[in-house]
Structure formats: C-alpha cells, structure tokens
Image 1 (tube, rainbow, N blue to C red):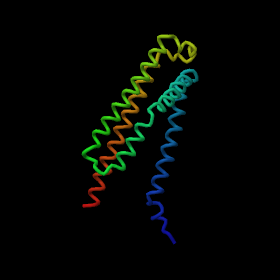
Image 2: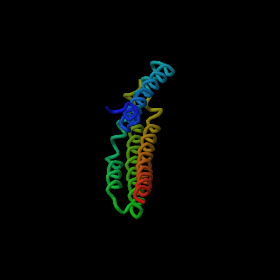
Image 3: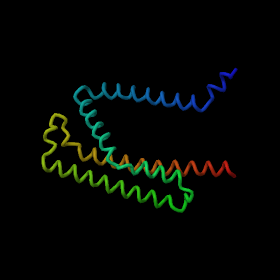
Image 4: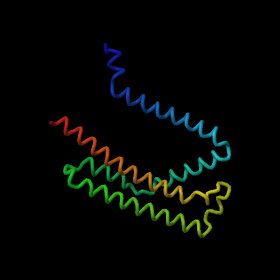
Length: 157
C-alpha cells in the first residue's frame, strides 16, 4: 500500500493543487472586479481584456522560439544574451508597429464604431501594455533558463 503521506507530498499533487488554487483565485478576483466596477465598467474592462488577448497573438512566436532555442542550446553563457537581446529587439519592433497601426487607426477615425466601449480613450494604453507583457515574458524565459542551469550545475557537481 502506498502511504498517504507520500501521495500528499508528491510533486504532482502539489502542482495540481497549486494550479486549482490559482484558478480559484482568478474566479474570486473576477467576482470582486465585477462587484467593484459595476455592469457598465465591467463591460469596458472585459472589452479591454479581450483586446489585450488578441494583441498577445501578434508576437509571431518570438517568445516560444526563444524558449526552444535556450532549452536546446548547449553554449548557454556565450549566446543566450545575444538571443535575448535579439528577441527583445524583434518584440519591440513588432510592438511599435502595432502601436503605429493603432495610432493611425485612431487618427483616421476607425475606432468611432466602438463608441459605446469608449475605446478611443485607452487604445494606445492597451497597445503599450501588450508590448510590456511581451517583453516581460521574454525576460521571464531568460530568468527561468538562468535559474534552471544554476540548479542543474549544482546537481552535476
């Protein structure tokens, strides 16, 4: 018989319980935001969140490519900073292109069809937030690789 203590202390149980705890906190957070904002502003919040999600698809997979390259790269210290700087440069260029498209669309009046969401007031801010999210994701990938390689080196030594 497997002891109950070994099952509770297993990494799989810890991982699954942490994930469900995070989902539960997200649900509670959604209820609190909805209660605090009210119906009208929660709709605007939902629309802005939807736009951020759509803008997250415009990174062309740069962060996923960086993750694959860093995980398979044997010469970590020599080239990883070059990979990260190139990924940040590409991400910034893509983000600035998206922001320029947003500004052009705003100046041409494209967003006037979305008047009920008051999107004119915060569309540029949404573009900047999307750009910062991408850059932060790249830095997190680099930090994870650095932390993992240090732990791996301790295990080997």
